[in-house]
Structure formats: C-alpha cells, structure tokens
Amino acid sequence: MKPVHYFCPDCDHAHVGIPAIARIHPDIIAEKIHRALPWRLQVGDDVCRVLYPKPRRSFIRANLDIPVIGETEPLQYGLWVELSEQDFTRYQRYERQDIPLVLEGRLANEAPEFPGTFDIPVRLVTRPFPLRPLIHPVEDDNDLWRAYDDGLEDWEAQMRLELSVSVIGSTAA
Image 1: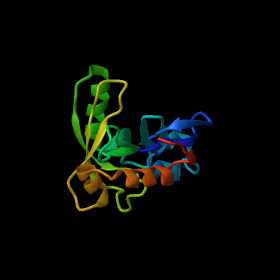
Image 2: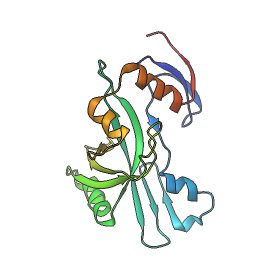
Image 3: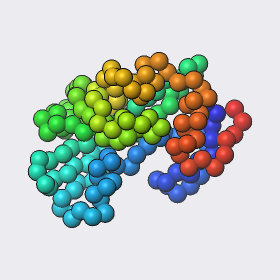
C-alpha cells in the first residue's frame, strides 16, 4: 500500500503513513453517547460499558489485521467487540495477571467497507500490555471473513484505506 496524507482526529494534525481504520466507540455507544445520562454509560479508550438499562453490556477495543497480498504490513482496523459479562470479567482479570486468553464475542461495529458485519461472531485473542487484543473472525460467509482468510489485493486495500480515513492525498511509494 502507498502511504497517504491523512488527518488524525485524535491529535488534530495531518500525518503521512498508513493509518489504522478505527472506530472511536462501539456503534451502540456512539448512538447513545449524546442522549444518555452520564451514569448510564462508562466510556473509555479501550473499554466501554452500558450500565443501565440492565443487562449490562461490555465492549473491548481490539485490532483486526487484514493481510495484504505481497505486503508485509496488514490493513489494520481498530474495532470494538462485545463480550458476555463472564468473559468481560475474565478479560479484566487478564489485564491484572497478564494471562493470555481467547474469548468469544460479537463485532460491535459495522466494519468500514464490509457491509453486514455488525454483530458477526469473532474470537478475541489477548496480547501482552500495552497491545490491544486481536480480532479473529469466526468462519462465516461474509466478505470480512474472506478478506481475513484470503487477504486483499494491494489496490483493494488502498481503496478501502482511502475511503475510510480523512485522506488529504496519496504519496509516491
């Protein structure tokens, strides 16, 4: 993939490189954040929770790496995964004890440029702090799983990158 000039919403500056395609919140949190009472939500950079109405819902931010054919670097997505309360408790315990885990969850974002991916089953594989867990789509009949399993052509990865971030322009490779 070719590096692009892009605008970073986190630091309000332009950069050159290959950014991750990220979502700031799970889709349900993004919908509720402006109309919910503050005590109903717990919103952070790596963990978000809906505390009320019951049952609680817990979300973990993680990375999804899509291989790019002929490239060493993958196309990276920063997405959210919803975990059961039991798995969320296990995840919190992992953070304190640095024990590797594989957790079952559901994708909490529609992956950009992959329609129909909201709520698909995924596995979340933890990594040592400060790395975010990795998302592994469970085999399914959708474009996201096929891209994860087969990889993307360079031109397709470039197109998805440029459609998904605030690109100012491409640079020469």
